[in-house]
Image (tube, rainbow, N blue to C red):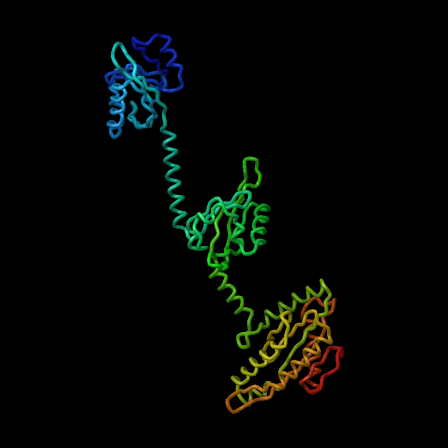
Length: 433
């Protein structure tokens, strides 16, 4: 479409026409509902390739049908009261039958002796389309926030919660209004969890499935998984976080249960062989770092095969359970006790000298021997245990050498008459049966 040259009306001076034509906004003048003047911007909005496609035409030709009544009422009010109509938005048809939205304001003028209106307007089509897209986007966001089970949140640079989704009430028991404006750390039972989250996000810009815990309104502590990203201000500086977190308490409980099942001996309830050997490796590493005395003992029930042969395997199982219970009652929280298999058990005593370990072993020997196991209502069986012990050495790099030494000491305890402790290389004297 070439340059549009508007046609002036007789009542406008050339100077006035030139002034209207230079305005960056659309200007039209009409009387008796007929358009008498339109500047170049107005003709462009109407998509008119010639002034005659607009001038002399009724304004009603261009007003969208559903907006006709409202617009005509404003025109009549202005004509009758000589007032300035405040801006209003309505739809129009262009010469190419496209619908556009304009924001128009008008006031009365006298045109060749009759009352008319001069109106200015802006094309708001793109803005309205953008607003509609934003409205739809906001509706979709709000719908998502109200239906999602995870909790979406946003915090500022000070760690204050600026937004949290409504789903938070189903997880923590707090309403949105009770959380927004509060420090996010106030809902963490352990502040170090929040500090670790911030440090990690600042370092790498995001986290995925970051572990943590939160305190509910009723005091319960739940496990959460956090996936968040960093927010930066216009200068690229840290401005806060946003992301989601979800309640994984049931999942963590199941994981802990599976971990326990994987690490526990099914019969006795104490640590199984795999877990005990892993624990031995951990204690070796600590011994190498700190050099504290650490004793390793292998405990083996005496004549256990005889119990199984005489009373059956169920009786043997009962003996193993009772034995594990008796030994555990004598241990410290820092001691590790596990079943290596059959009637053989592992005891690790960290930060314990040979003397202190011998005293513990002697108590175990005496308590086991003084507590016969009832295998049925009529029968009790006497149980004793032999113990082979060794101390960790700074040269020990794996558990195999340590267990070999303890096993050799156990063999010597067995051959010496059982029901006693024997140390590798005779660190301690044999106890009497």
